[in-house]
Image (cartoon, rainbow, N blue to C red):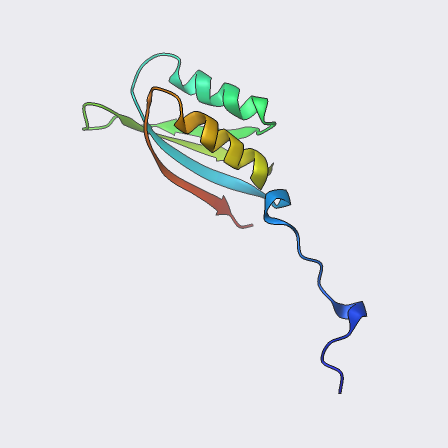
Amino acid sequence: MDYYAHDKALKLTPLDALESRYYLRFSVVDRPGVLAAIATACGRHAISIASVMQKESHQEDFVPVIFLTHRAVEKSVRAVINEVERLDFVRRKDAAHRIEE
């Protein structure tokens, strides 16, 4: 019995090319223009935002901001994360997760 046959081989997608929705959470300074700057970075990398949530925080120096994206390419999401993390209002990147559908 032949367990491996070339005609049944699965094609692997490179991680950079993987497409999925994403959950991104950043801890940011609560000031005007922060959401716009993150949204602009997403737009530069062709990432469409499905929803945004910012709740008040009991921390004085930052608030959590959550973005859910539409389907996006992994490479672009990583580029946005790297760009946003360098902005002066970001205290830390809390989470970045693929949403499996």
